[in-house]
Length: 287
Image (tube, rainbow, N blue to C red; front, side, top):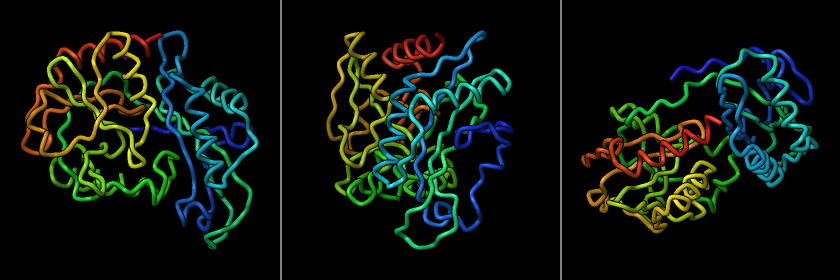
């Protein structure tokens, strides 16, 4: 997937050339990974944009930033206005939107108070690409949410995701499934996982080690509306042979069926439940 960042960005209340929002080489956030971001899709539907659960995304950004000591004064309405202003200034197409709060200033000490910058970037992204993926069980353990809260979308936490995804690709897989300290399946490198078993869905119950994705929540709402049974429970690698299929779900990734996890083969893309979820999700995002 090729990403092309837009040449301009919303930065601290105004539209600027993208590189004007870049932090210093000696910035606090660059050296220590101290930043908080979110990911949003602005779906271009021919004559207007549809942005799925924007308020929830902005709330998550604000809450995570505040808990990290990166509180900022911009309201959700300010950020929404900035996002829409940015979209008006760039070519109309589907974009992955990345708002991020960070410290651009120079300071190496771990604990410091300094101004917080907020930037909103837009990156082109293909939509509705239902590409089956291969996964393996990652040799890297999922970072403990009791060590670094995974629900805050902290920049530095994603080193864990980077190492897992990189190792998977080096070994010929598309992505990695990470286990927690108890050997339970948590999620992929940057997506929740749902398993298909006949006429029901099984997904890992949320723990401090699993990110509560907005796309995951949307799918649970879809399941309820379609009266599809969803079981949230602990899931272990030794169960992988018992499932008929599996798929990943995330804002950027949307829904991606899995054709394998290690030696376990699945026909997820043709599974009736996956097709139902995909149809409903695409109807939502094509509004």
